[in-house]
Amino acid sequence: MSDSVDIRQLLQSWPYDPENAARIVRGDDGREILQVRTPLGLEQLEMQGRPDGVRHHAIESALEFHLQRFANAQATGREADFELSAEECAELFSEGTLYYLRYLQLFQLKRWAETVRDTARNLRLFDFVHRHAVREEDREHLEKWRPYILRMNAAASALLVLEQGDATKALSIIQTALDQIAALEELDDETFRFERKRSRAALRGLQAQVKRMQPVSPLEQLERQLRSAIERQEFERAAELRDRIRGLRAQQSVR
Image (tube, rainbow, N blue to C red; front, side, top):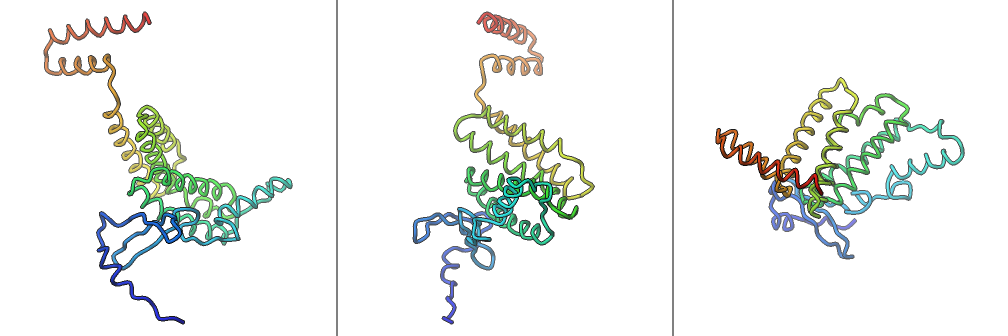
């Protein structure tokens, strides 16, 4: 066995800073690699496939393996008999944590597309386990975090389309996620209640930011000015603005 390599010099070249703890670098073969600086060392995650680079069951991930098993069960008419054992669920839970650790850093790096990819992947995991786990405790194990992952997926999706200049679509994505979180079945679980409240607040905050960035139509500008005039008790100004608003609405109705 060869001597271990002292990475102290590498760590000294990148001092730990919680505000700058992740970076994307290129491997020797040109592939992108995610590196995370921790207080005690350095973690490295693959950007494609499983974050640890391990291929379980000779394919990309344990989830893909079990989805393939389910597809085979469907093809042979044994869908009703398909189940996930406690051991298989434990394997899927551990694997899902790896993707969570990656998308958490990707979000901080504003890599929206990859964050959407990984959160959508873990939502598939949530749904799959919830439908097919043998034990009820396994079926319910991930549900307490569903509000959080819906929030992360929606936020990354909205920010991605916002970068493309589509504020209206971003607002639609956020509202859909808010509706999904509101519609979740109530769980008698403190973590679930906390994550639901926190996620709704975070999405509403993002929603407000996007609304402020939206282009304002001439009609909306006048309506805002009218509200301001009324608040300041500038009644003559308010009357003038009402007339202009009526005129603009009349023009729009003719079109």
